[in-house]
Image 1 (cartoon, rainbow, N blue to C red):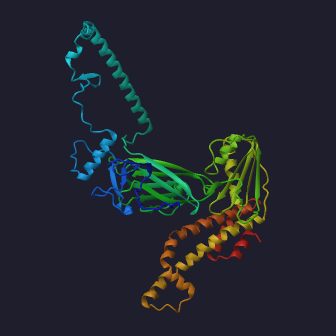
Image 2 (image 1 turned 90 degrees about the horizontal axis):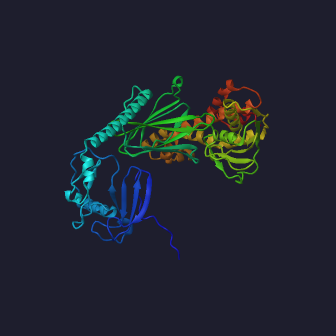
Image 3 (image 1 turned 90 degrees about the vertical axis):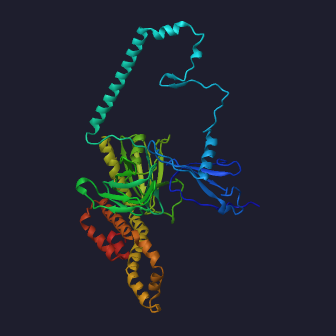
Length: 521
C-alpha cells in the first residue's frame, strides 16, 4: 500500500532558492538537505541532534545549520570572533567537502611560486646544468633595454584606455560620482489572476533599506508586506502619476508589493532600490506595463464559461507582414511568444482575469481580426495598433466594427456582482464601530437583526477585507467609465461630458439604473 507524503518540517528563508541538493555534508552519518539562497547563504537541514544521534521523533529532530553567510567580506584586518564548537565543526565539514585546509605533503617537493612573472623561493641548484646562453641573454644590457621599452609601451596603452574610460564617463554624468557596488538586484513582476493585480518582487544580495516606485501612469498600491509605504500626491506636470516610497522593516533581502494596473494606459514602472551598503548605491529596475496587462493567454480549445457568448469584431487590413503584426500584438498583450509561429495564419486567445471576457486574435499577412465581447478591449487594440502603424508609417485600414448589442448586457452582467459585493462590504463596515460600542456596553445583542449580528461577529474579517476596498471601488468605477466611453464611441458619440452620471450611479447603485445608463435593455 502506497503512503502519501507528509509535511514534517517547514522553514521560511525570505529569499529566492537558487539550488537544492541532498547529501552528507557536515557529518558522514546523517543525510542533509542543503539549499543555496540568492544572497549567497548556504543552509543545511539535518536530522542530527545536538547530542550527535538521530532523534526518533523525526519532525522535531530536523535542525537548521547556516553553513555560509551571504554578503560582502568584512573590512581588512578585522578580528574574527570566537566560533562556537558547533560552528568550527561545520567549518571543518565544509573544508573537507570542498578540499580546503588540506595538509601539505612534506615528501613532495614544493613547486616554485610565481607572482607577476617573478619566481619566489627559487632553488639555485635548479639552474645547474643549463647552458650559459640564458645567463648571457639576461645579463645583456641591450636585452634589458628592449624589455624596458616593451613595458613602457604597455603602460602607455593602459593609461590611454583609462583616460578614454574617464572621458566617456564624464560625458554621461558630470554630477554623479562613480562607485563600485558589490550587490545585484533581481526583479520579477507576475500577474496574480485571482486578485487581478501584479506582484512586484525585488530581491538583492544585500539587505534592502528603501524602495522608491515611480510611474507615469495611474497605479494602485495594495499589499506592501512588512514594508511601510508612503504614497505621494500625483504630479502630472512632471509626468509622475504614481510615486510611492517603501521603508523596509528589519533586515530583509526581498520586498514584495501588489500593484493594480488599469487597462488602456501603458508605460514603465521604475523601482529605485537602495541597499544597506556603504557608500549608498541605487539600483534602477524598470518594468514595462502593457495596455492589456490584466489579460493572460489561454488554450485555443478552452470552452466558454456559461455557454455561447456574443462577440464584436474589428478587422484590419494593410501593408503589414506577419512579423510586424506579431510585434503589434506583443505591444498589447503580455506573455506573447517572442518568435513568430511558422504558419500562414496565427491564432491567440486571451482572457481578462478581472472581467472574465475573452479576446480572439487571428492574423496573417496583410489582414488581422480581433473578436471580443468587451468593447473597451477592442477600442484599446484599435488605438494601440493604429499608433504603432503611424509610427512605422505602415498603411493600415481599420474596417467598420461589427457590434453585437447583446455583448453590452453580457459585460454588465459580469461586472455587476463585483461592484455589488464591494458596495455591500463598504456599507457593512460603516456599522462596525457603532456595533462594537453597543457590544461593550451590554452583552445582550439579541435585539439586533440577523444581518447586524453577522457583521458584529465577523467584524475583524470584514475590516481586513475592507483594507483595499475603497481602492477596488475606484478601480471598477474607472472600468465602467471607460466602458461607457467606448460603448458610445463605436457609434460615433462622445459622452465624456456625461461621466458624472457613472459616478452618481456608484453612489446610488442598482442593476436597473446600470442597464438604463448603458442603453443595454
